[in-house]
Length: 272
Image (cartoon, rainbow, N blue to C red; front, side, top):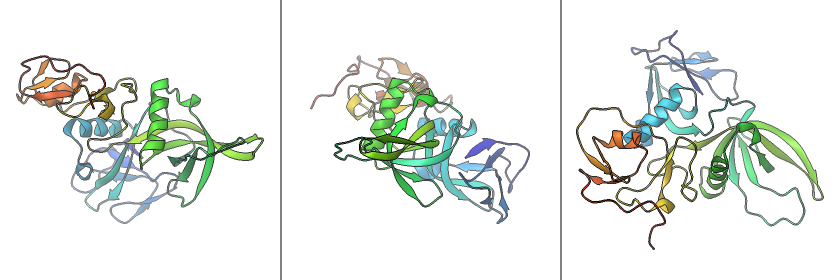
């Protein structure tokens, strides 16, 4: 986990961040020392291969403490990120952190298995029977996105929370009570738009030139690359934007490079 912190500097660059290892009291910092929190000068996201707007979105979430990252603390004070995960509700995480991968299994009597729960940085896992999202304040759209990512992507979802015992005719199992939900940031990927639905503040980013393909779109935030470059692009809303970063801020997909000449195909199910 990261947070803004301008009290310490590491290496030659002061970036104003501290990083700590999830569910551990200490971590090995770039200089070899072991501390509760390690000073970070630079957060390097280049390994993720994200589009400019998506990278800017993740960087903003990291700076605000709304994201989780996996990476290496280098000697020069850089955090080299190999995985980035977005917090979906903005709630403060509490409890332990788990990776959830959904299970499809027949079940005659409850409680029934829902997912494998792998506790991060702990080396053990269990099977849970339920995921209670009520405490996160997640909207129905976010709940749908969470369950879709848990069952349909190899990365699953990361969840902060606590476990509780549930009982039924089939015996007893653990259920996870979530405080926050995280989905992974990946190039041209992320969480698929669930029938066009995305979390509040997000939009359905369809593949370039395929404005109607919401079945192949991914949910993205509206944060773009803030530049003054003049490189017009046509948005799926039929408007011409100064550059691709401005198009991201406009919360719309990209129809094509250059100014709009004719209205793009409206959002909807793509043709087979």
